[in-house]
Length: 139
Length: 120
Image 1 (cartoon, rainbow over the protein chains, first blue to last red):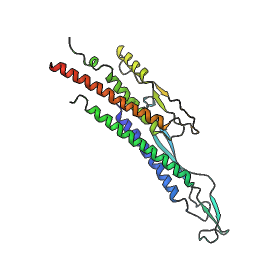
Image 2: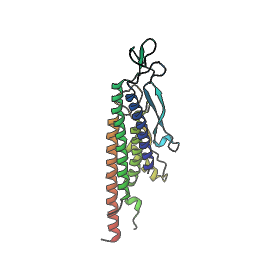
Image 3: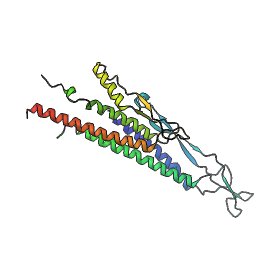
Image 4: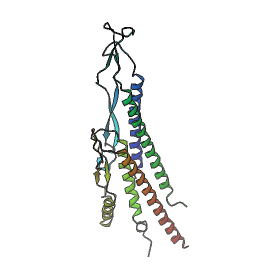
């Protein structure tokens, strides 16, 4: 029986979705973090997931974990606004705002929490399967 | 005539093993729900069960790692991921219910055997 592997697979998904949630909350928190130069401005972060079929090195057994390969920064253009009164403004009176799209982040958050819940559900079902298997032949 | 335990358990012991394997595959699909390019896998349960029954008949136990197939998605996605959350959740739920069913049958078999042994 492969219950331990199932737990590892669901656990890896929980970790990955937590990283995703982390980047989303970071993006939303910094959605309005202005800055005086293009380089210093916060850029939206996104995790890159990849399938990791290295459970015992055997992909034919079907166990495929998920891992976070990297967290990449979005290369969408920053929002540049003219705010000469802003203390962060540069010589031209321009202020740079991050390229975070709050609506996209919110929908991504819904998707991430749904995926997280799904994997919690998997863990719960696997646990009850395992427990009823332990009771085999009793009573 | 003695009781042959592995025959008395019937198909359910093997079913249980395959169900657990399939749970792992479906859990992998659910875990990689948002992995770009991941292709959802599944097994043909009936064929796998027949295959492992044939393996047992010819004495080749453990020859039967089930054939992994690819799920055909209902909709194409831009990132090449073929996991559809609803489909996988339904399959997972059905699969674990079937696991419980096999377990119940196995329990009945064991109870029957226990009665036979006790001579009740």
